[in-house]
Image (cartoon, rainbow, N blue to C red; front, top):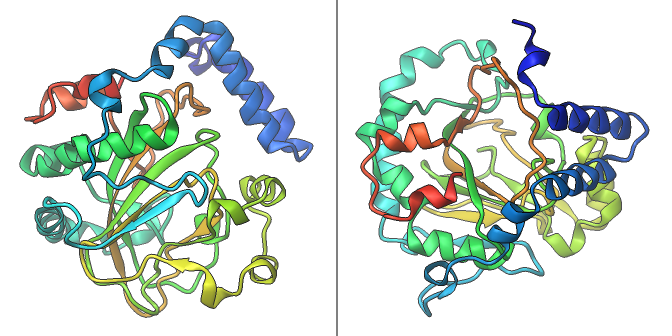
Length: 310
């Protein structure tokens, strides 16, 4: 069957807008137009998610918020009780798949790729349960201002490399106009370890975001705004990490020059998002997409989990 026959009219229109706007150098306009089209086509669904349920919005005093001005929140290994178990689970997953990653060139990004499988999630439910825990959901919902959608999850390995390519260049993510990704360091990350590095939201101007979507920003241009020494690097011991709006904060990572890096990552996007459908396409080493089918085979502790997926 022709792949275009499996793509809706709306999705085909989004692809056309995306292609045209990126070609003329207006990537942010592309995202705004795609989001507007999706809101107009499903206004009731959009309005429903604009008012999160009371159980989500009643943020407890123990939950530290993600700064809306800065666009991020760093956390230490002891911030969440689950972090030590997450680190142990991800290390087991790495050991299980270590023999499979000797040839990094077979992955879509040889410097940064996912090794997590659906079977791994069944063996280590702590990973999904943390991503869907009350503390995480409350913080993300408070920042995004709506009931967000958990889009992807993964355990990502960065091999030692000497490249500056793709997401190793300063950029922003085009999945939505605003989103939250969580990165948890599974191994200690220090100098030469490919730390996730970013600029706060307040310094990531519209001009920089537009260039970042096109991945057309040189290190020198970023350094003129904020010297490398003052940029925020997510270094630290295992269990440390960050919640960060990767649509609003200019960032790069996986420049692992002397030490490999292993991180646990999951991603919440706003609704509607600006993600384009890729029917029939599986990318080696890509994110593991979170679907109702995936959650259906897991032991979830949050009874409301499904509302953060659909």
